[in-house]
Image (cartoon, rainbow, N blue to C red):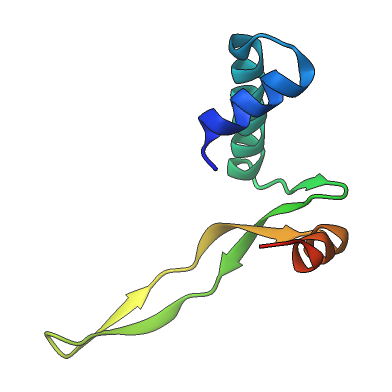
Length: 94
């Protein structure tokens, strides 16, 4: 499902204009992105958590040149679904 399909479905279910729904969805994503860039986690009860995790510095190998590369510590965004969300997906029809 794409973002456009999500917007169309929300518009159909709520009766709101697609433009208004699109602005709301875009604003939600912008708030989540800005919060995570600032190092904050975002928790949506019943859906899941958008969490910033730190990856430690590690040594990797460049196989073609047979050299060691040091990858510095960095942050990555992750998503952890809520238990109720996981249970619904597991019991849903495919």
